[in-house]
Amino acid sequence: MACAEEIMFRGVILITLEDVFKNPLIAIVGSSLVFAFWHLYAYNIVLYDESVWGANWSSVFIAFAIGLVLAVVARDKRLGLSACIGIHACYNLIIVGVLAV
Image (cartoon, rainbow, N blue to C red; front, side, top):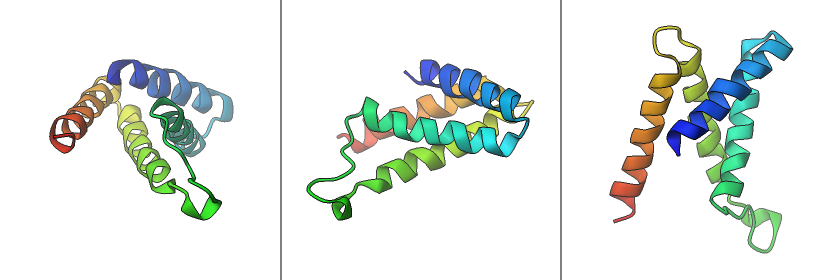
């Protein structure tokens, strides 16, 4: 899953946004927002229980922050997309392997 997500969000969306807007900051933030909100759908994270005040916005923030880090890594010419795939895969292994016990 990490490989497919990184190809999509960093390999396609990040590069496309940078080509369209000619601004790396807009591309990094934009691709990270799409990444964060996609994870809500992918993992059925409910933003609220009964009201807006019961929102689970921390999940969106965490995914957004991780997206920012991965986008910055992807733009680094020495690291690139392969480093993003490795970081993402390790993160998934830690979350699934350690925290799901």
